Length: 54
Image 1 (cartoon, helix red, strand yellow):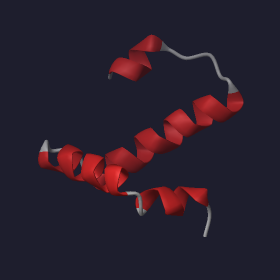
Image 2 (cartoon, rainbow, N blue to C red):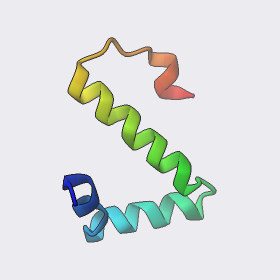
Image 3 (cartoon, rainbow, N blue to C red):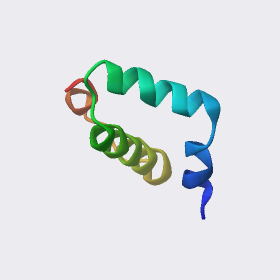
Image 4 (cartoon, rainbow, N blue to C red):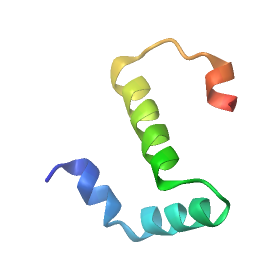
């Protein structure tokens, strides 16, 4: 299992996910956002500010 799986076992990450889910954010949306920001961080892509907001 990779580093991403290890993050899911972090207490702070679990707490943050619970808060987001309680606010109506689905786990799928959390995963998509994580992948999006991970891709930006790793690829140094130009960031469209509108995509960050919506």
